[in-house]
Image 1: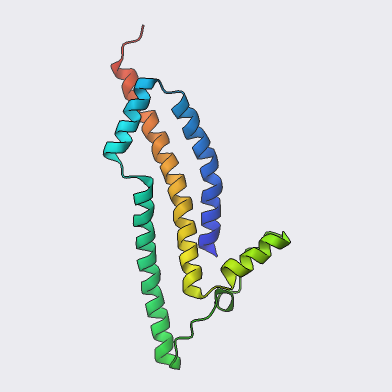
Image 2: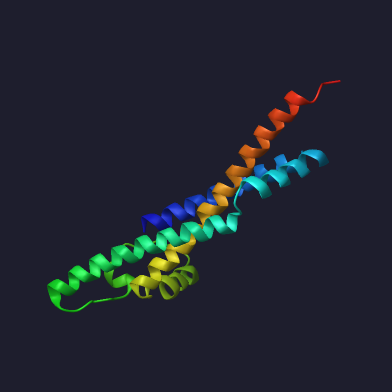
Length: 155
C-alpha cells in the first residue's frame, strides 16, 4: 500500500515537472536544442532502459522476499499458502467513486499476491521513471544554459 501511495505521488509530481521541462526546452535556441539532444543521447541512458533496469532490480528483490516468506510458511505449516492480495493485506486505497473502486478490486486486490506485487512494481517503475527523467532533463538544460552563457560573448 505504501508503494502504491508513493507511486501515485510521483505520478502527480511528474506532471508539473514535465510541464517545466517542456517550457525550458521550448525556450532553447536551435543550437542549444541540438546540444541537448546530443548530450542526452551520448551521456545518459534512455528512460526506457532505466525503467527496465529498475524493474528488474525490484522484481529480483520481490522474488527473494517471496521465497523467504513462502519458504518459512512452508516450513511452519507444510503448504505455501499463496492467496490473493486482499486476503493478505487488509488496507485498501479507495477513491470514493464506485466504478473506479470496483475496477481496483477486480484488477488489483483480487489478484494473486505475486501478480499484485508485479503490478505494484510496474506502477512504481513507470511513475519513478517519469519523475526522474523530467528532473534529469531540467537539470541538464539548466547546466547547459549556464555553460553556454559563459562561453558565448554578450553583445
